Length: 394
Ligand SMILES: [Zn+2]
View 1 (cartoon, rainbow, N blue to C red):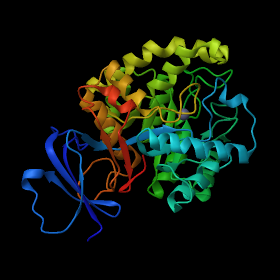
View 2 (cartoon, rainbow, N blue to C red):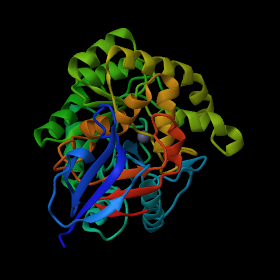
View 3 (cartoon, rainbow, N blue to C red):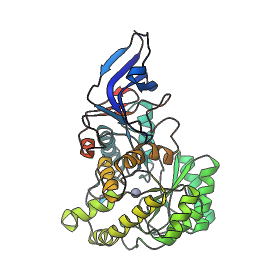
């Protein structure tokens, strides 16, 4: 008997955006997909282990482009002062929550004391269970800028360049820079620009020299433009977009990762949930503009990847299905939202060669669903089973 497994009888949503295939099959060998197609065209004389998935729907595992695995999604995540050991233990639990709720890969955009990088290596080595992930190490921000309590503060292009190099030396896969203020940090406003175009360009150059992607926290229009002009690969949050920056992003192929869930959970839980009043006030004041910006960007053809910002207040680890639903409520078709959560995120992260769609040669990261998510997205909240690298984990 070979170590190949044949999954058959299901409806396939392959992540490319193509029409689903009824009665499809998938052959998995070790960690990878070796064949995929219509059951009627299956030719194989080999002896295979067979898993009958008749009546089920199979789609790629979700890829979350924006997570903070080291943050606990309590009312005031920065108010908890915990030891590195405590953060590590909690993060280990959070990793499982992502995986069991259907996220098979993610990107961490801001860790604490490089714990994110050690966790990433532990998952890759198989020491702890979780989705594989890419990590940024410490986010790079201006002195007193958004995220400064956990970030690397740097001022001026030379120091920002050095800060980026430090992250790469520590083993970061991606460089995160803070282009504007944000909701979560006291005393900074979402709309105000922070790191300058010249400062961000220095960090971006360093990342691109070694083939790494760059992402920016960017909410206000001026800061978003600074980051896009500096050559950023993805704009996270993108709360205030105007026509000019939308055009720039379409032209340059810049991704946006809306993270609608972050704002949604803050507004829903409010001060009663223990969220600081300045956070609630800022979130409420930007929510409508945020949705309008994402709708305009989507309609104009800006590339969209799915990310939740998990670790912000009440934004639980594993909240990816919630973000998919919010993207649809905001503007996207269910198919486009699923593509954003799979192929789009994989492209945004730079891992599309191996992940993001169910095609030959890619890793066998997939979900088995009882219903078709194109008809009922709620089925993503109750996933039948999750396969990671060809192995059933739930
Ligand atoms: Zn974030």
